[in-house]
Amino acid sequence: MSELRLVGIATGSQIHLRAFGDHRDLRIMTKTISYRLLGLGKIHEPLASQLKAEGILLLDEGIRGSATYINFRAPGKASNWLRRWFTASIALTRVRLWAQMYAQNIIDVPVTDERLKSMQFSIEGDGTLLVAFDASLFHSDWSGRIEYRFQSAQARAFLDKLGEAGLSGAGQ
Image 1: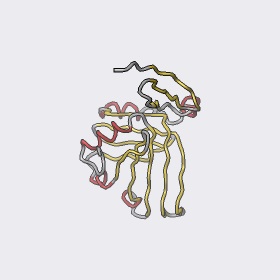
Image 2 (image 1 turned 135 degrees about the horizontal axis):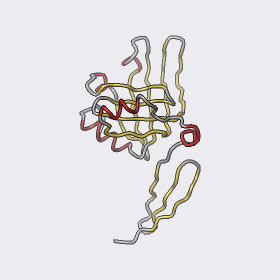
Image 3 (image 1 turned 45 degrees about the vertical axis):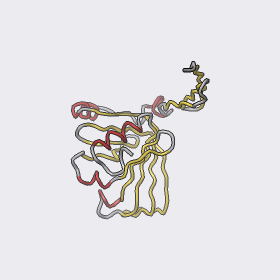
Image 4 (image 1 turned 30 degrees about the vertical axis):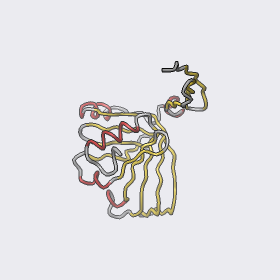
């Protein structure tokens, strides 16, 4: 086995590690600047205590996230394609899948809820968890598709845990 030497290079809000010896790039996802400076995307009390009481399986806060709205229609809102970037937090407990955009809940679904099985879960690229679903799944007067992306070093672990729960597209 060859010796592995790591050299860190700071670029923006990520640290890239180049492994010399086997020529693989290792990437460590770090927290966003707005999380580090302003605490945006932090899970505050009493929610943090509730999640702990539910038995946290996985949690990542202060990460990059995006929401993509495709052919989206809601009262007073319409968009053929719109993407918004934000600082996010995501957690999977024994009770629910939960995520927030800044301090606004965007996903809060009990693991026993049948609607969770209608959501698609997958990994994109290098550590991005995709959660996609039809907008009418949670709001009867909405239509179109909503895609949430969470750039997390734990993306694969989230997908695997969701797959263990037998959810659509998860764990593949």
